Length: 203
Image 1 (cartoon, rainbow, N blue to C red):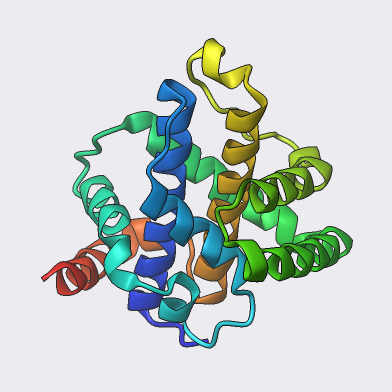
Image 2 (spheres, rainbow, N blue to C red):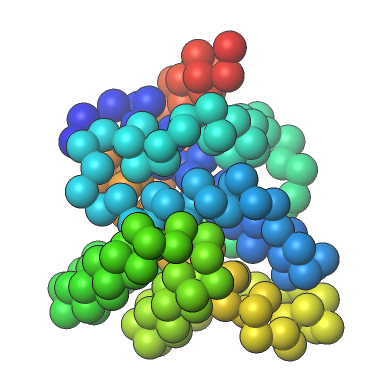
């Protein structure tokens, strides 16, 4: 896969867009259908040839790109979102080094992809399957990703399942970011390049 700054920007937008839905559902109990569909679809496209193909409809990534532009400009709409994204990027390092876990996750995603082909990526059965996969694997890594929100909603099984599935989607985008040549040093040395790539996508 091309190690272009454009691919890295798209992958980071994927991280933020998935996590924005995590934040939304944790606070309100409700998510937005289109971003969730894109996020969960990205999990299932492990063999996509390009970063764009991972997300299918790149126009649907505009929200994530806008969030990334705000963070690069040090003007985030939600500071907690940035902290959550950093935690996912750090977790990706541990996950990618655990080859046995990565293999298990890959097999689980392949199984979920079969179900999604019949029911759709955001079908409750597919969400539950991805959520259980996350609980059995990635949530065992430390430090665990801690999601803050309304306890009323965080006590509901359906909300917890969707959050876990979306966290898996965020991690999938973090893996794509790393495979595209991404590094935390990009936020020090490539901010202007990333901002330009975002502007090119949004205009």
